[in-house]
Length: 381
Image (cartoon, rainbow, N blue to C red; front, side, top):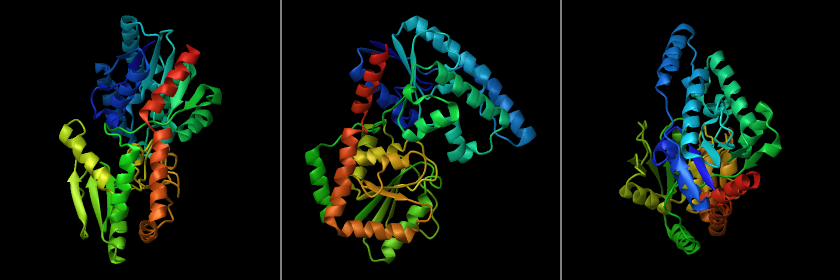
């Protein structure tokens, strides 16, 4: 079977969509006979809705998202139709392309995958909290139209599936929930897991790992307070910050600013692998998150994770089974107490680690995702 894989960005670029397009393409290539990348799909027409957005922002103070412009969606659909004619695929998988697929004219069946609906983005992200009414209207129109035309929605989260059903009227029979995998090249074996756990248990230091570009949005300030609490309680602890170099007032001891690590380089991939292996806990009590790819990556290294009750995080981190879900009522001291209690109980720490890795191996990996996607597409084709 020949699959057309549609993305706005170049799927060979590991930086695009945090590497998800790249690893998705790589996984599809192992399950299907032929996969043709259609990306990048772009149109110069976007300068018009961008200008429209600047004007509306000036006049109303509201944000107009040019990505939801119907005129742009029609032109992007035309480009996709041309690529379909050129490559003649048997089916299409469009990633993060809901608006652009709404006006595709081809009869080739297409499947949609995405990390959020426009409704969820409006609820979760501050950047979507001040949208112009026209932008909201166009987004819902385009997504609803795309959902109606799609053969199936292949979604990574039940949170997302619930929105598709509740906000867009998509029947449950048209939705498959299949978790994404980790955007990493390295996959450790079960033998390596045991070696890592032995090393972590024997280490006198608790190493917290934070991976995120947007420091405040991802809960960075809260993490620093957790570290400070651990130090005040006498715990030998440190925090490695990857992805950003924030300005931290009254910075406590034990903070290491790693900065941006480039996954496109061998050096960057090796460095990230080392940081995950050396960590004791992954921590990112984010205020806004969809899939939570970093939590999946942590699970692939058998790392207990500390996340938050937002977006798809509770589906990536099973509370008290593979880590801790912080509620809004949790204080940094309470999180620090949880870390100390788990750290002092070797069996409890091992259970959290092993269960995180087991969930990764059984559900949250790209091999599992691509096999199930193939089952869905071949069943309907």
